[in-house]
Image 1 (tube, rainbow, N blue to C red):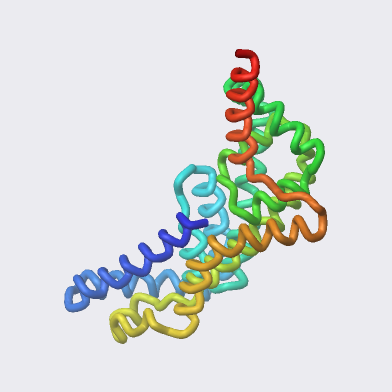
Image 2: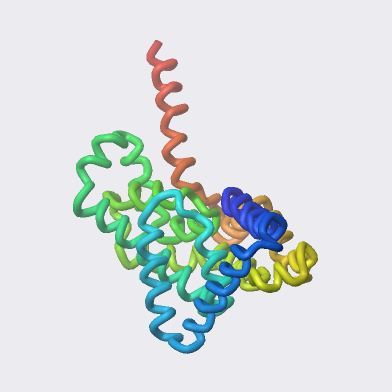
Length: 252
């Protein structure tokens, strides 16, 4: 989540730098014309434009390290279409990697994870999709979660709905940030002041505060309604190491 906030700030900096460096050059005019052409095409062919964008989003989501796509989706498609594209597309990508880990990479992952895989499997057996839902809301590492959960006993249906719902709050924030970001033409005409719109300031504040507040809020809600504290997959995997050290110390 914090990484996404940093990406959002970098995107704003890149837009601002683009306007500052090339505001009087033809290259900026060309970029503006290209952006207008893309937006015109999306207005004239909304279904085809959405299908193309959705396919690109799913494919790029299958590549690790391609964060920041939600902001671009909101910037081009608006909030509601962007949110559908991001949340459904990211869930499809998660399902693909989850099923690949379950049916194609099961032995490889299990052999590398060793006893830690058993611990993750035991946690899922107790908590199931509810545990995964909290992990998604807390934005546990996307690819680690998908691959680690593949060989476990969690059902594909439980994986799907907990991922779909758990990713929704964070995705909504970043899509909104993109939706209220200025176009290149607005950036060229109004300069840096276009980055100080009320909507963008709210989005920036939420993007900055959410990574800090959301984990505590989710853990409080989990403790309040279930009496348990959700653990992220990374915590479960790391928790095996101290226990192993304690067992070794006890043997000595």
